[in-house]
Image (cartoon, rainbow over the protein chains, first blue to last red):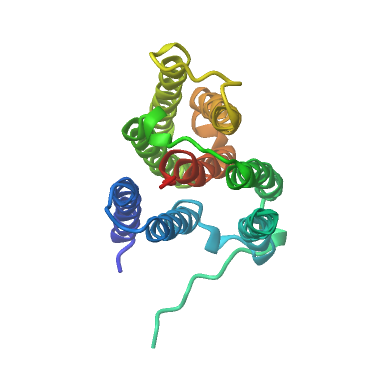
Length: 100
Length: 190
């Protein structure tokens, strides 16, 4: 590959990532209005949101090119926070059920 | 046989500013996480929760999202231009315009909510309180990011390393908006 072709290819990847992010945003808005079960819509929204976050981290933030220690530092809150959220929401739901 | 994957940089070779920014963002992300988890817990505990679509303009929020995502793209191109020794001010200007558009729409949204036909003040209910707290906290991050980009815009190409560090912060602002958009604007009640 010639040196002049490489930046063009990278630009193409970036434009592709941007288009994908915009399309995923449009899909999110469309999913909310679908006449399907609420749980299915929420699952779809979570999936689309996580895909967008991953795309942003890989394509724009270039997380894969950072040293391993920095990658763990950046990813730890991303995995810990949803974990805490799930634990707290389960606890809240458990309390709501047992209080009835 | 697959093509070789470019290896990641070594920590010892990574500029201190870059390491510092990632460390800062890890702690800042926990701040956002705390707010979003609080929102989730309050929503689960609430007997009644309003449908966001009845109060908020989802289409305008989608436009805000598009502006922020596109600004991440222009910021990436600014960082690449700075790395290659080219002038990044054009891309920085585009980032400033898109970030400014995001804040302007948010300002209009607040104005509409506070003075419109169905007033939603800070203390109207739990939904409104958490909405203003989370979007306001994020808006302050956008404002801080815009101030940094404006500083780079004035400084020009002599600040190549700084452009890369500010780009990481700007992308984080975009990243933090993704769950806010999903949770506050889109998550269906029924």
